[in-house]
Image 1: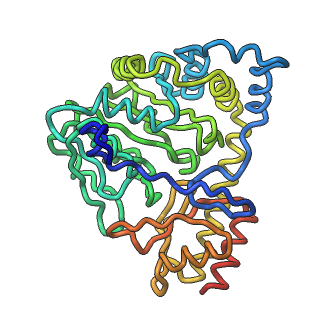
Image 2: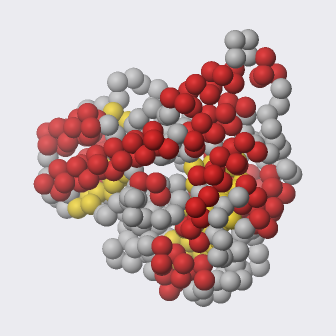
Image 3: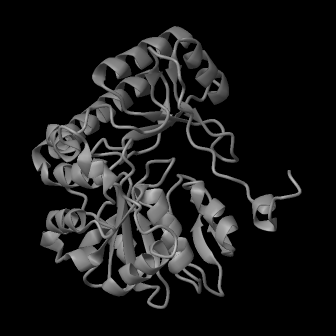
Amino acid sequence: MSKYWSAVARGLTPYVPGEQPKLSKLVKLNTNENPYPPSPRALAALRDEIGDDGATLRLYPDPNADRLKAAIAHHFAGHGIAPANVFVGNGSDEVLAHAFQGLLKHDRPIRFPDITYSFYPVYCGLYGVDYEMAALDDDFALVVDDYLRPNGGIIFPNPNAPTGRLLPLDAVERIVAGNPESVVVVDEAYIDFAGDAIPTAVALVAKYPNLLVVQTLSKSRALAGLRIGFAVGHPELIDALERVKNSFNSYPLDRLAIAAGVAAMEDETHFDTTRRAVVASREALVAEMSKLGFVILPSAANFIFARHPQHDAGTLAAALRERSIIVRHFKSPRIEQFLRITIGTDAQCMALLAALREIL
């Protein structure tokens, strides 16, 4: 530590992102990236935005990203969503950060699961937000009743990360309806992989002014490299996020991100085709790993959470790495014997299975 550090910097325990190795020829299954390319329309929009001479890049982007908000609102129009219900930011992490600052910083501590996205306690440390953690049950499911007591706000991923477990929409609604005095943030980074029968919590936004739903274009629309996230909620919640954003960075999304984001949201065919392919690969991988003796939690995400009763998870992760396959191992209480494995292409999944058979 340097003597020049502030007390805030000294007290932080930063988030540790998944490894982004520089090596080539890896089967990279550790950071939940989409195994398929983004929409061809998004790529065309990038080229059009740059143009022949790149002259547009000398100009600032639209600080409000109105085109992107309109495209997101159109996608959710069936739920009564208008552009006034939409906020956009530099990845869902930035959107969540603004929610912690603008909506979750109150006198009472906020609540979130004990096994969840590890950025939540980091934001609490950064913004001085008190928090309490509610333990998942023995099957790693969220217990709704734990969120029906006084609090300063609630946040949880659905599906949860890193477990992949989904809370049904009626259970989500119980939490939202049971906390009329608090903001409930539902982090839906992986909801598009839950299946056609699973509606997003955006379906509840028109009914509940205390609900904020956060999503990303990094996963199901394969734009992790452009950093585009958004939130959907009551206009008063959105206004709080806008106030924080415009006190921090008025231009969080560049011209390329806005252009590609609009095209990706509009290309429903590519979105639907690729997410269905990921779901099919997930189910096939679960079936084959189960035959190898793995215990796998029910997943509604583009990853699975698996353990083998006879093999240490850290040892398995190291053995896979020796074979140029990278998965995520969390050395945390209750989950230290699990591996989180991103769903890759069918070829990548086959390579993983071949390596596991060899190791076991």
